[in-house]
Image (cartoon, rainbow, N blue to C red):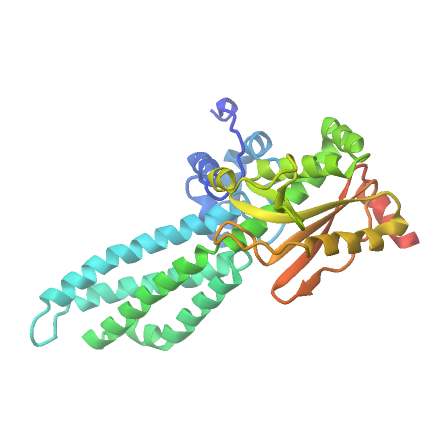
Length: 364
C-alpha cells in the first residue's frame, strides 16, 4: 500500500499547507498531533508504518530525528497549531449552545444539577489549552503565548476548585464568560499575518540557499547572475514568489519597485497572488573586504522607502538586506530603528560544505 502513494506537489503558504497535512493524516491519522508521550509509546508502530517512504517522497527534510527526547513529526508545524486550535475552538462553540440552553431553562431555585455536566467540559477545555501551549510554545506568535498564559493563570485557582466541587451558577457563568473572551482574543492573535509573512520569508531564504547547494542547474543560474546585481534581484524575487512572498525594492521616485520588471509594483496582482509583500535589497559582494561597505549601501537604499504600509499584506516591521557572495561571509548585525528591523541575510552562490566553512572561520 505504501509503495502506491501518489506523488504530491508541495506548495508553500499558510493557505495551501492544509492540503499537505490532510494527505499526511491519511497515513498517520492520530500521531500527527499526538502528545509526545503518546508518540513515544507507539514508536515501534509508527516506525513500521511511516516513514521512510512518506518522508522521502513528500517532505525530505521535515521529519525530525527519532533519536531525540522531543520526537514528533515536524511536518506542517504551522498548520499543526492552526488546525489544533480550530478543533479546540469548535469544541468551545459547541459548549456555547449547551450553556445557553442550560441558563435559559434552569430551574428558578438555581439548583439545577445540569451544571455538573457542563462544568467538566470547561475544565477539559482548560486542560486542552494548557496542553496546546506546551506543545506549540516554540511555534506560535509571542502575543498568542501571552494571551494563553494570562487565561490559564487567571482561572487556575477556580478551575482547580471546581474540578472537584460544583459551586453554583455564578461560578459557571464566570468560567464560561472567561473562556469565550479568551477564545475571541486568541483567534485575533492567530490572525496576525505579520508573524506568518516573516516566517515564510525566512523559510524561503533558507530554502534558496539549500537549493543552490543541491541543485546544479540552480547553482549555475546564480553563478551566471552573479555578474549583474539586477539578475540576482530577479532570481531572488522569483524564488520568493514561489513561497508566496512578493519581494520589492525601495526607489526614491517610483516607491515600491518590482524586482523582475523594474516597474512600480502592481498592488492588485500582489493581493491576488501572494501571501505577503516584503521590502528587500539584493547586493553583490565580490570581495569579502567590501562586506561592510556593501551592507551600508543596502541599508541606506532600504531607508529610501517611505510608502504607506498596506494593511495586512505588507511586512511592516522587517526589511531584508540580502548580500549575495561567492562563498559564505560574516554579515553585520541587524539594525533596529524604531519599530523597523533591517535584517541582513547572506546567499552564497558557490558555498563551501559546512566543515570547510567552519575551518575557514576558525582560521580567520
